[in-house]
Length: 44
Image (cartoon, rainbow, N blue to C red; front, side, top):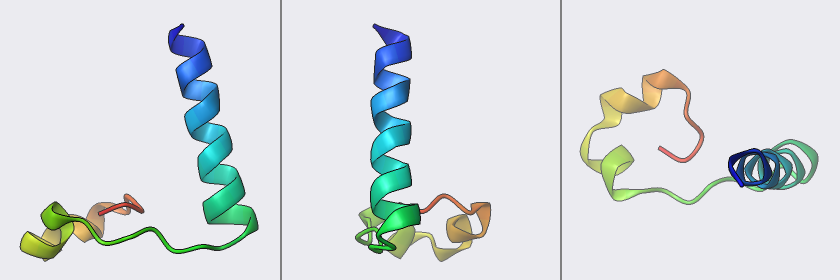
């Protein structure tokens, strides 16, 4: 079950972020703590 969840997550990331270049929506954590964006996590 865990490998399936990883594969689905990786697939969604590759399609929407890499291929279609659709930006991820802003999150409350990323807005509240802008220094966290330096980690490079797209959803923050």
